[in-house]
Structure formats: C-alpha cells, structure tokens
Image (cartoon, rainbow, N blue to C red; front, side, top):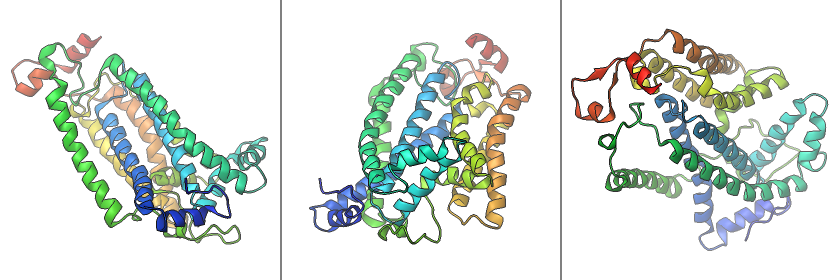
Length: 355
C-alpha cells in the first residue's frame, strides 16, 4: 500500500500514487468520485422513500437501518476526506472535531481524546486512517441487516399498497434484472464521464495545497454531500445550538415513521403532501447551496429560513397533514392500478382493509 498515514508524508504519498504508481491516478479518481456517486444514489433512494412513504408501517426498522447506514457513510467519508492532508483536510478535521467542545463540562476532554493530543496532528491522522478502513465493514454489516428487514416485509411500491396475490407481482427475472441493468448502465456511463473528464469537479482545489496549521483557508467548506448539514450548523449563532441543530437534522429522520401518521403511504395519492414534498426538496437544494457560500450577509439569513423550514416540514407540516389532508382514492390492487378497471376503493375503505 502506497499511502503513508503520517503528517509529514501523507500529502506526498497521495501525490506519488497519482504520479508513480501504475494506474494510481485511476484508482484515486475511482475512489473519490465513487464516494460522491454513492452519496448521489443514496440521496435519490432517501428522497424516493420520503415521497412514497417507505418509512411507514410495517417498514419502520427498515427505514431506521437505512438512516443508520447514512450516518456511517457520513462518518466514513469525513475521515477519508482528512487522509490526503491538504488544507481542507486539516481545517475540516479541526472544525468538525471542535464541534464536540460545545458539549457542556466534558466537551474539551472529548476533543482532546479525539485528537490524541492538543491539536489535530499525527495521532489524529492515524486514528482516522484506521477508522476509515474499519467503517466500510460496519456499513456492510448494517446493509445486511437492511436487506434482512427488507425481505421480512417486502419492498414498497409507488402505489403504496401491499400485493394481494400473485396477480400483483412479476418475476424478478427478467423484469427487475433488465430494469436494474439499464439503471446500472446509466450510472456507470455518468461515473466514467466524471472519472475521465472532470474528476475534480466535486472536490475543492484548496485540498491540493499541503496542510498548513499556520494558514487558515479563506473559506472552509466540507465535501458537497455535507453542505446542507453544514448550512444548518452555521445558521444558528450559538455553537451548542448549531451542533444540536445539525445532529437533529439527521436524528429527526429516525423518528419520521411516527411523525407522519397518515395511513396513505404514496405521495401520488396525497395532493397537499406532494406540494410540500417538492418545497422540502427545493429547501434541501437551497441548504446545499448555502452551505458552500460564506457565512455572511444574506446567506446567513437565507440559511436560517431554510433551516427553520427543514424542521418545520418534519415536526409541524407532516403531523398536521396526517390530520387535515383528504387523500385521493386508492386502487383496490396493484394489478388494477396498472391494467385499469372500474373497481376503485375510497381511501378510507382501503385503509380499513389494511388495518
């Protein structure tokens, strides 16, 4: 292995991999862009689950395991971002680990423990390297549990009703295999385009500058997939409040199955929910943009508005819609929704059948 987890050699070892190791540039670009594309796929999967109600009963455990996978991915990606030991690596590690100092009484001790000293230095880099190697195995373990939970209750569907018999299902092969093969082909095409034509598009140029503890970058930003949460962190002026808001933005996803009490799963049959879903989607995009902007002027104001709407969506709007929204009629079965037919049941009767 050509990488050296030492503050004096980490940056040079990465550059040596790029220049001297056979196909090292390709391995590094696959690794760094693979992480970004992995997050793209996971975010699409999450928003699809939010729209189609994949978190609703009886799939609460499936959803919770999925959110846990997201948390592990974020931890793995953060530690991996530190390893090249560029300017963004060093200062990103300094900023994020310093967040734990906001914890009353024990915060400073936790930060010292994480650093292995009194600043981000060689012990920190070694620990992050070891944990970055370990975390993918934990992710694989939770993914296995995720699949077990999936096979316990089956996957959700865009209609949001469970199959009532063989007429509502199709064989996995060739229908799903062909569909998945097409999706994989599109993914690999875009992935190859990113690797060979714009491999550094989703990175930050300052990370090609060796880490310098004596010189702070003009603008410290994390990787793009952390930007919405980074915007939430900076939107709250109080340090502890910002940390609680940032972690709360993820924690609220764990309790989502009990916040949205509507008996209708799919957003296709919830007209008001559909509007608020797309507003929420736009809000997340706005948070991502604001997280990459300087924390000053109008950007701070917009970040606070977007952060407030983020929590308002989960804690107020979804519970309220569960009470006041009148959904559209549900089809009696999956087959009738696809093949057509005159038999359509009202939402209330469909809910009664499920209960």
